[in-house]
Length: 326
Image (cartoon, rainbow, N blue to C red):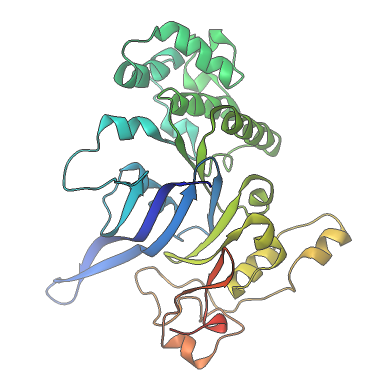
C-alpha cells in the first residue's frame, strides 16, 4: 500500500497588508490560504491547480519553509515541519526541494553554473567529489558538462530550467515542489521539460507537488488533481476520474474552457458553463461559498454557509452544497 509522504492539514496562511479605519488600527488581511487539506503519496505527482491569486503558490512556499503557517500543520513522513520555532533541520531541507516558475530570477546571474550547483553539494553532501557530481547532475538533465562554465544569462529559458532542476536534484531529495515549472517557456520546450521530469521521477522514485494553472497539462502528468479557488480546495480526485466526471461547478467551468483541436475532444468536455461576475478580492471574500457570486447553480444556502468537503465517490471529494450540507 502506498504511504503518504506529505500531509497538509487545515493549512491557513494570512497576510496583513495594511490597516484601515480612522485610526488605522483595523488590520487588512489577505486570506491567501484558508483551511487547505490534502496528502501527497510516495512516488506520485499531485497536481494543485488554480487561477492566479488562488493561493496555490502560497501553499508551495509554506511547504518549503519560506512562510510559517498562520494555522494548521504540514508534516513530512509524519514529522511536523513547523514544530516549535526551531529552524528546519538540514535533513528535512535536503529531502524537500523546489523548482520555481521563472528560472531567470531563481538563478544568481553573478555565479556560473558550477558555482550554482556546488552550493547545495557543499551544504548537504560535503564528502562527495563536487566536480564529478556537477558533471553527473548536468548529464542527468541532458546538458553537456562544459555548461558548468557558463552563466545563467548565456542560456535559453529551457536550459535555465534544466539547471534549476539539477540544483534541486543536487541534495538527492525525495520530494520536489514544481511551481509552474513550464509556464515561462515555449511550448516545444515545455514538452521537453515535462518528459525530463517524468523520467527523473521514474528513475529516482520522486514525489512531486505540481502547481499550475494549466488543467490540460495535468491530464498527462498528475496522478491526482486538486482545484483551488480563493484559498480553498474545491475538488480532489484521481486524474482520470477528475476529467471524466467533474462535480464542482467551478471545476466544470474550467474544464469546459480548455481549448481542443477536434470534435471528439469537444464531446468529452463538460457542457459549457459561463460564470457571471468577477473573482472577488481575497481581502474581501464573500460569506458562504466563495464561488457563489459566479456560480450558475447557486442556492440560497450558498451565500450563507461555507460548504465542507464530502466524499461523493471513493477518492473523489468536493466542497459544494449540491452534494451535501454541513
